[in-house]
Amino acid sequence: MTRPRHLLPVVIGLAALALTGCASGDAGAGTSVAPTANATAAGPELEGELTIFAAASLGGAFDELATEFEAAHPGLDVVPITYDGSSVLATQLIEGASADVFASADEKNMTKVVDAGLADEPVDFATNVLEIAVAPGNPLGIAGLDDLADGATTGADGGPTTVVVCAPEVPCGNAAQTLIADGGITVTPASEEQNVTAVLTKVKAGEADAGLVYVTEVRAAGDAVAGVEIDDADAATNVYPLAALTDATNPDAAAAFVAFVASEAGQQVLASFGFGAP
Image 1 (tube, rainbow, N blue to C red):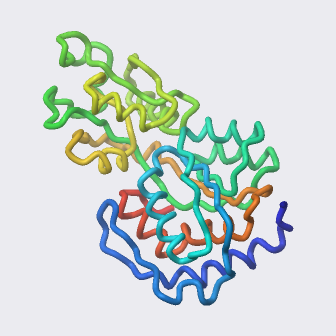
Image 2 (image 1 turned 135 degrees about the vertical axis):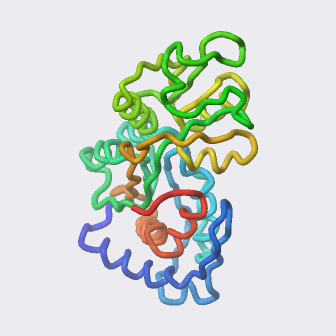
């Protein structure tokens, strides 16, 4: 069912009133932000299922947001969220995949969905920057992006340092290309992955000496990897937009979820996972 566009601000306003009463929690990955007992009192009765497509880097944060949203709306079921590279998800939506909400890790892929007539009025809700993920303890002593340049350092196997990045069409890959170009270096990656989770997995498994991933990925990985900051990483800051889809099967819940993510309570959850403010 397509929502008349003039109703979206009303629904978002009602949802924001209902959900900004959520109590805040201290920052820390996975910290829960419990809704107040009357969180649903002022908002619409939300029922049925909510289907969300979200960038892979949002995994932990959106799982937490979905849990909080369901707690505030007992009649609603958020189905397991589909996570993948933003370009992959945008293509799936344009080719006919069904979802209520789309959260992209960049504006470029959201624009593709908007231009296809599948969403309007996206809301910027978070930012993220890249960091170098290396093995725990940083055994190779990688100090910055220059150390990833071809021939600059020796890898764990005695050969060239093995570097993994996201594919250029993926937001994390586009950001990596920008930082590498700005640094005036040449990096020949061992592989280009379709999402940031795959890059981190290769570093964790010892299949790569280093990977360019988001700071949120390093934080979520805990002791499994170490992070090395990149000078001027904010030159390739990714802005994350979120939108209710125009053909959503549950448009009220979609609009309410967008409002929740953008609310103070939603922003506190995102900050606890290391995301920056939009």
